[in-house]
Length: 449
Length: 81
Ligand SMILES: Cc1ncc(COP(=O)(O)O)c(C=O)c1O
Image (cartoon, rainbow over all chains, first blue to last red):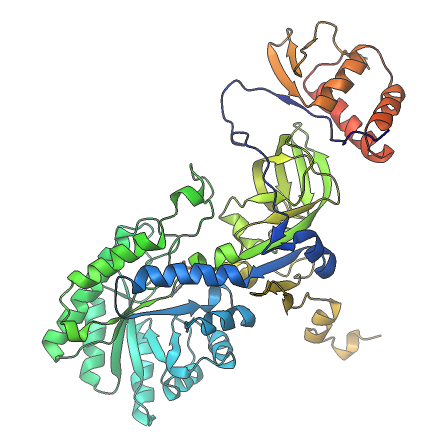
């Protein structure tokens, strides 16, 4: 006699009709393959947990994003935001697709060079550029986006002894109706600081003012904020034209497009509220077209989108370590994935899915990571199916900021693999081991033996 | 282990507790076990029956059974022993 399929017995209280904080019950979705590669096989081959990056998804998303803009505006250039995911293989996929590089430190700058990005296709942002970094960027004709007056004067000083004229833009911050206003980066528009900085640069005659830059924030769900930003940058460009008869070559609108992840506390899921690339493109190119640029002096539109281009391509796979009851009767499930690897669980309610399930039954569950730390919570409250120790889970949309902001705490960072267009898998960043740490640490002689 | 004797279990797996006015839902194996408990079966009888009927191993079932009993206690559906 074949036996019936077993499932854990459960009893749950019915709260008539009221969706509680765990959300309404829906049918249990599973995620058992990525680009036709079985998740089970990936975990078996590369260990648990493991990050997976789907190159086909990067390509598909990039195509969607670029065509939204190029179908509306003649001069468009994307620049890959390194901080969002700077694993070299990922950066090289973006380079192959035609992206420039957007970097914010000497470390990222060097990475871009090593990935074969030509110097004049590297945008150097951020408040932290050493004199050495700036010299190299000037030498390579990189696009230096000035963040503050101290940097501006450093560049003017370096320009005196440099054979090459620095190519610069200023970063501008402004009120676009978005809260919080990111006013700590760049020069302010409303109080005239940005215009003052441009004047200082133009009168110096030592640098080429090639562009204007802003990055108004991240996870911006109102495309119209970008239209406001464009019109303010266009105002500055028009003033430069009028006063100095100088036409800038590009406007860099930064990043900030939302991804389909759900922000904590959001009422509706991100996949229902995230604006499309078309909606952003409409607002941005519409504002550019209606600005006062002569048709032969239309600036190139540069876009530094990060999370919206890579979030969907990243997955984090893991395993259930244990189930527990909390003192108040709530169920908790401990995963081998914690906030050390899934840094974005501080912002997002990530979708955690079973790889396989034999049941449609779910229970109010808190999902914890493996760390000995109270804040190690992957999902505080979720309707989760009845998994047992050893069962596997997959977390969607983790491509942005996790593989850069992850913490080395208590345990190692895991393997990162990429699935290519032919659906072959490749390790693109090796899991750390004790040897990784032994290579970095130094024991003073008196503590040896 | 004794279920409070006025607890009602419906055909479709709903439980009503007239003492508190609360209702609960069971999955089908939960219903089967609760009915066995109601009919006075011991833990080892129940385990024997479940392991013969379902493809579960003994340890997994024991963990899950104890957890289920904890939840019955938590919801105050058992007589104090
Ligand atoms: C200057 C700059 N450009 C681009 C980005 C990418 O932003 P996002 O991932 O929100 O698109 C950032 C992120 O902080 C940034 O600071």
